[in-house]
Length: 268
Image 1: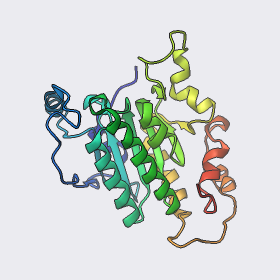
Image 2: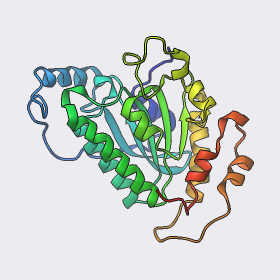
Image 3: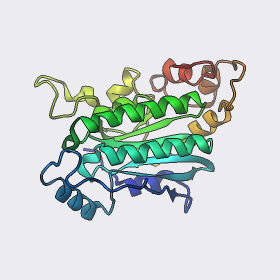
Image 4: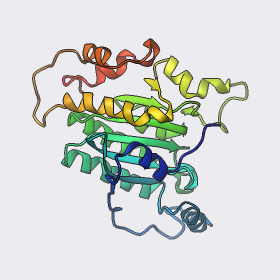
């Protein structure tokens, strides 16, 4: 099993020294035991907060990555498995809105098991909220570069991960929609790895931890340089040639999907 970094550790890994500035959490108090009055939910949240030092499963803020400013969204897997609840959704929406208001790329650093069961259908609706924010950010011409950590499963993979323009994966990370507890009994566990997702084109590169900041910075530099203005622009030359000429990844590390998505004329 690969080492599981905390949200703060992965932020320190990719952000330039002393550059991270946390965004304030949106106002509002959670209802007692959550929207379903799930007995023991408040106690579980309190234990998670004490264990991790966080008040929710995501830490959002702005930082420089080798000089390129971006909005960073780091999941804390130690907080209820990095699950998405109503308050998580509030933080994610606020982070995407901030990115559009300040014309910044978005970098989700994902480690999540998916929706939070204690919040039922309201937890599932957070995936729709996040997917909408991702689409709005793409329509605004702002890059989204996701880093999938161990594990990245469920709706977190389907929205923040697979919905990004570029998907970088840490070696050995468990990646896929189905988590380990809900897969078919005869499922090959090797099919749910970062390496397998890269081989079939669902992720773009497996990046060693030591190279994560420099690789992320390269993508942000390339995509930010091609960032579409707020008003529609004339079609640019195909990005695929630029990406292949500037990045020295193995042939399996790139596929046509990210190059196609970042063209200014491509709209959902």
